[in-house]
Image (tube, rainbow, N blue to C red):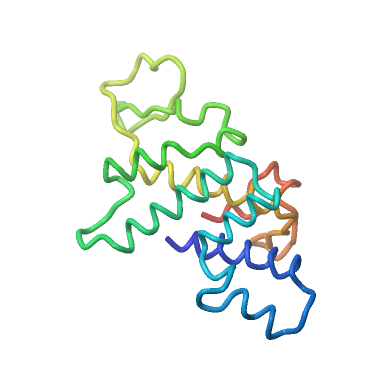
Length: 178
């Protein structure tokens, strides 16, 4: 998942800014193979222990890392719609900050397509549908990225070239990157 490269990069930029003292060789050793900040897992753990991430964001970044590793190490084709992956993605905690009905959105068939709803099922629906894991991926990941950028105090470049802090966009990344 490409988004984990973004997360890794964001964490590395914050770590580089915080650990800017010492000589270049010493700093580079932190990120080299076997270094303290060489893996995404260690960067997430350091960021959490430094107080940059709250427990929900730590949970979600760890969960996404595990999903990514599942994709990377599985011989069979993987999909966000696979039951185990979809269930993991539905357990994201951070999107609750952005979407008041996160985890409660349902899908149902209507005459000419589908409808997404929360609360009571609309009368015009014909049958329930399972929301694909791609929905959780496309809706949840931007929320996680926005909250992470805000927590790390990183500005995100908008699609029109304007720079804005994640906090100025309600925690969502500018440009709605996914």
